Image 1 (cartoon, rainbow over the protein chains, first blue to last red):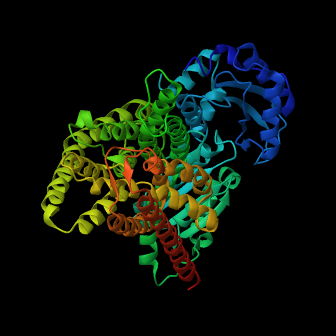
Image 2 (cartoon, rainbow over the protein chains, first blue to last red):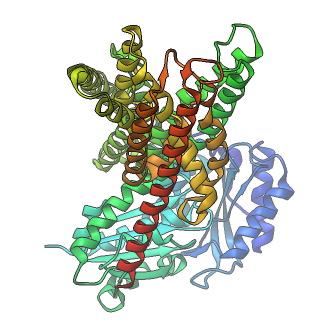
Length: 151
Length: 473
């Protein structure tokens, strides 16, 4: 699971207040972690996907994602915001939790895609969302991720 | 009886929305005590695939799509009450969708299926499904047939039909060609199974088909050929599909596709091939040999007709092999007439099918047309394999036409007394002096090819006409 998410890919206090600022902030974490080789190309892909149809799925959650040859390994960056982020969401409400998923163009192991799929499914459960909101520190958040990935 | 719902979710990237929507629908349905099964079409491939049984039993179908659904996939839901929604609508308000199914789901009629003949319609769909899987296998197999065939044909032309010498360039090309043909069998089986049950089915089917074609391991005189590959592909595909439908804990699922399913399916198919298909091949070949021997007193024309039909029936499979070995054995006993029939008939199918794609491209698939050019050239050198893709795609038409053509050619061959004394290389046989008389050989070949081309075109046009009638009615 450490391949997919670790403490360095979690930000408890996102600084930005707009969609593009947040994508930039989380993409930076992925870049610093070596998950993506080119931050610019990755952001371009993410925005392309976002413009197709918003990933602000409501319930305070956005799950932007990009599939790009600039991604070295599948990973997810997670960020929480205390003040709320303006995002074109499906229920019209602001976003306070963002999951930025990075998926390689090819050669991605199915296990990793499977983990991202499980995460997506889990987000539809209220107890999981509230757990992430209430978590006090990165370790607690990591253990919640661990519970879905079963490691 | 609880209400039963099935559905499909997909989205442009196949990373997140597909799964979120599936989960949301499952949650809402379960809250109300409904039964639900959702097929996810994401970047991992299709998971939780709906069986025809699932669909038959369902009261409602929800298609929550972000990137559409092909006509073939849509056809699965003919006659059901279907609700089409955009996938984002599901994420916005899943409860609303489940609650209003009764009001919003509309009976979906597919083209050509009226409510009176639904029973028939679904049967036809079932068999169309199998042919769809076969066509997928063929499209992956064709490049192997073409590449291998061209290498072999060049090699044969370089040595003028004789044997290649180890270490020479012709020897290299010959062996590369043979490798192509050896790989073609597992590729066909593998991608038939892949089309049915996705990635976990690929390895077991490829391994099983390779095994089924290894006569030395099986202890038989011939391998299972392309018909064996089709059998292995379908067996493994449907076995894996069933295996995937069993309930396992979610945490085990990643392990399932990569470890458990491939290992179990490989074991099962290997046992089947070794203990059932292998002995079956041996038994078939043994009884054919006895049968042909018992005919030795019958008229030569009858025996030649039977041999000709056998040669083109499974093209390299056990029946072809049995006829070939019998005819070769008779050469040693001083009767080269039967081997003359083999020489003529194994050239007919690929050349005829290739020519038919030139004459009537509208009757063939795009990949069949592309294969046609090399099939003619390669086939002329006595290499039959390029005909196999056509036979897999449309077995009754193609094999039927070439069996009739082969028997006609066999008759012409006997009338001219065409003989061959050694394994050869197609149209080079008379030139290198192993097949005689040349005029008889070429006449029989030309007649056979002509009849085969005419019949393939006739049968395929009739089939096409029938199909368009039934759609209109």
